[in-house]
Each structure stands twice: as structure tokens, then as C-alpha cells.
Image (cartoon, rainbow, N blue to C red):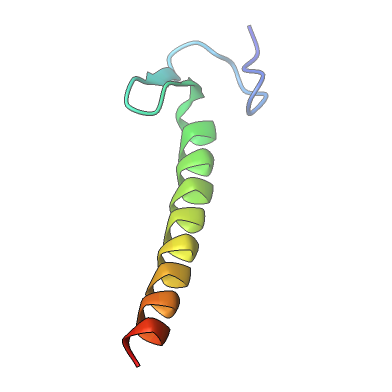
Length: 56
């Protein structure tokens, strides 16, 4: 079977992250986590900006 996420053979590299409820290969999950972490850090920055405005 070819992995639908990265096109490589599915054997031996298929993993599922229970934490995030992601089913996919490790490459795919790394990409998803990169994107997720990116959005979390961006939204955190937005929160910090709002809080610093309110502090003044």
C-alpha cells in the first residue's frame, strides 16, 4: 500500500498520534504539528499584543 499522505510505501512508517487524534505517517504528522504550532504561536502573539495594549 502507498501512503496517501506522502506517497511512500505505508509499511513500517505508519503512525497515529493519539494526543492529537491524527492518523497518518510520521512525515504527515510532523507537517501537521508544524502548522498547528505555527498557528498556536501566532494566536499567542495576538493575545500578548492585546494584553500589552490593555496594560497601558
